[in-house]
Length: 269
Image (cartoon, rainbow, N blue to C red; front, side, top):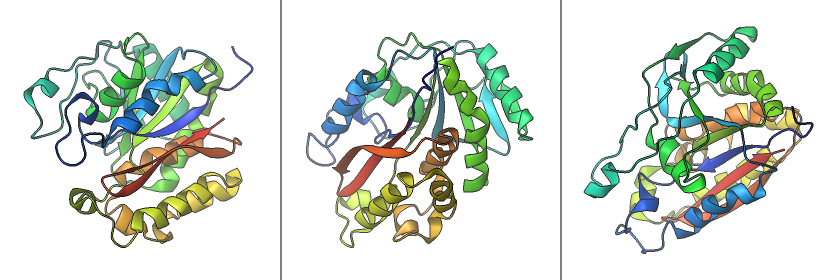
């Protein structure tokens, strides 16, 4: 047991396998800054985590599901990328024991969930973790989002799991703080939607916890909210992280402009 709570972080996971290929849809260095930041993020952590619990934008279920597979396979759930990106490996073990603990914590908060003994790691999990922890020696348990994408519910999910931070477990949200693919494909945010939303999101994440959770729950009324997230699955992992933050105030720890859009990462604790 550690007296210092392990921090909880929301990261951008990039586009597909972008960190492991020559990027041809824009400048060759489009994803270099984000990759370098992810590679060095472990240096800011207080110690190596005992395990990682990750919520990716790319797994949704009718009720929360928890990966209980001891040796999760990879899901190459991206399309049209070079052949070698479908041969990437990330043999990090799962943890059925931690999965059961997560289910128990959720049940204590009256949140229904199911163990999934078959699910693997999608690209929102294995792509950033392969950059962050390339040795693949830390157990990873991926937890799904709930398909209704209710922000208040996902804050509650995070709150139910915050005790894991006392056990040296790294709770990680993996998404993108801006995710309008039409704007990203054009490589230019003419109306500055990403900047307007990013400024609001940073103010919300750095507010006092009660106000933070209130603002994040009502994110859809923020400036340029729906232009930044036509569908909010890439923002919802942040709601989980904010819930797991408890009374810890947030800070922005990374900002980049990729494919014409502002993208940020946030840490609590």
